[in-house]
Length: 68
Image (cartoon, rainbow, N blue to C red; front, side, top):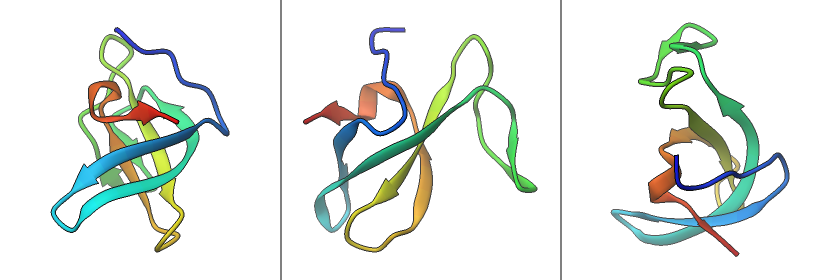
């Protein structure tokens, strides 16, 4: 994995509405989050991020996130 992010890191990512910023909530290495499936594993973890704009959380691959 090319990036190591930690809880609280400020990041940005692209959405269909444009660039969004938020914070890393946690590193996800399992296949589910509260019953929702994500494509995360120990070999290919994803990061749960919370949008500053909407407050919603989503899983993102490390390559999709840019540290601010």
